[in-house]
Image 1 (cartoon, rainbow, N blue to C red):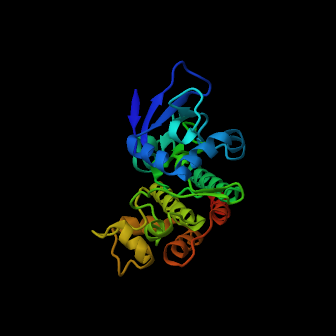
Image 2: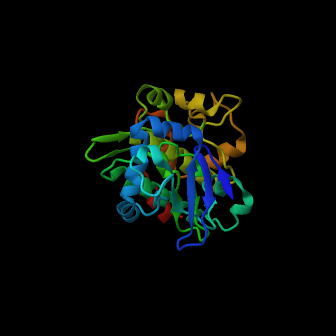
Image 3: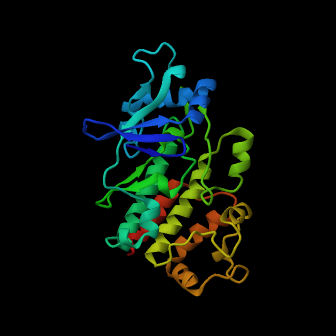
Amino acid sequence: MGTAGGAGAVYQLMPRTDPPLVAKIYNDKVLQFIRSDRKYAQRIIALGLHRDELAKSLSFATWPRRLIFNEREPKDAQQALLGFTMERLVGTTSLIDLVTQQNARFKITPDTTAFLCITLAAQLARMHRHPWTFVFGDMSPNNFHITADLTKVRFIDTDGFQFDYNNGMYTFRLSGLTPGFKSPGADASLQRTGRLTTTHDDFVLAILLFMMLMADKGMPIHPFQCGDTPEDVRIEKRQFPLSDPVQFPLPAPVVAAWNELPQKLRDAFTRTFTGPTPIPAAEWETILTDYRRCL
């Protein structure tokens, strides 16, 4: 059985292995990119060739394990590549479900949320510090999964990451972003260069952290959600409604939940959402660790 996604379909592999594996087979549109754009193919091949190092240094991400070709010993990997195998996550919950679905939150405490927020920020900071300078890019809450025991955060969609390989000899672009989970200017930058910086990830990280912490207060709201204006429009204008509730009226329960957060957290979100430079992931790790100590 296969599960269709944006870039292809994911199939369970038999017989079962340890860890269990799935195969991601690209759809015809992506395969056309791979066949015609050498860099597009090199991105996936580089990840597959360095799977052991990546699995060791950034073990929280589901990296490609083995490449899948349409022949046993391909003479041209670019023309023969079909997809790759990767670990199948078992019993995990997507971050979006953990935030919005009440039945997924019955074991969640403020301390658990703080721990997961710290873990998410720390892991993203590790990605940014890696020699390949990874940029996650499409940081949809669907691309983060939480293990059943609420102790680990797994990153998926790794074949879509932006990175520089072999001392910058190879540079790989991002494809697309999920509406509502963008940084100011991200779309324009992708159209212009196909690339983003780690500050994009830092901005979207703050969106995810905000949603997680507000869900703890019973208000799983997007930080730029207000009225009928699309979130992406407010993001582009850096209009963070809670920074000016007079200009951007919000329901009283949302404002009350926001005011329950410590001033240091509110200042950090306001600085990221309205200022020119978002707080880096590593700094969020420190801010959230202090917050957790005070719970």
